[in-house]
Length: 144
Image (tube, one colour):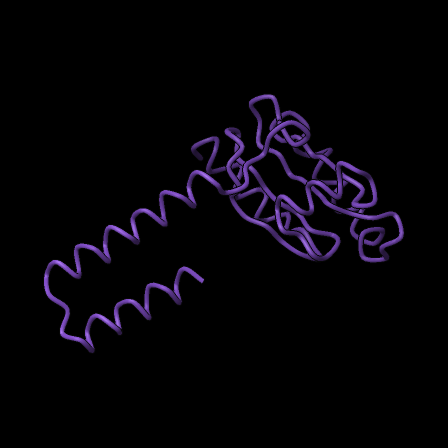
């Protein structure tokens, strides 16, 4: 949506021969929208807090075949990175799971969301979790 608004705004201004004041107003509106998004974007709090560690949140269901199939890979990640990463598995059929699905706009299970140590979402993956991506994200945190 933001990209569409940006492109259409630029096209309208160019087509109408936008004056400098119009470009400044457009820039101000875009900055205001970016600021609103920064304030309102979902962040990890409460259930997905990692006590100062990154968090890998898995939104899953015990009735989901893909969730059951990926469980060994998630277990392996959890065991390998036990000291550097908090893995949280949340059943989407629970009250907490429904709240998190709504907050993070998740539609499919399993969905994996990686948060840095400050609770900022870094990336997400649907259907599978990439061990190399987890390793890379943790390496960036450690500065290696």
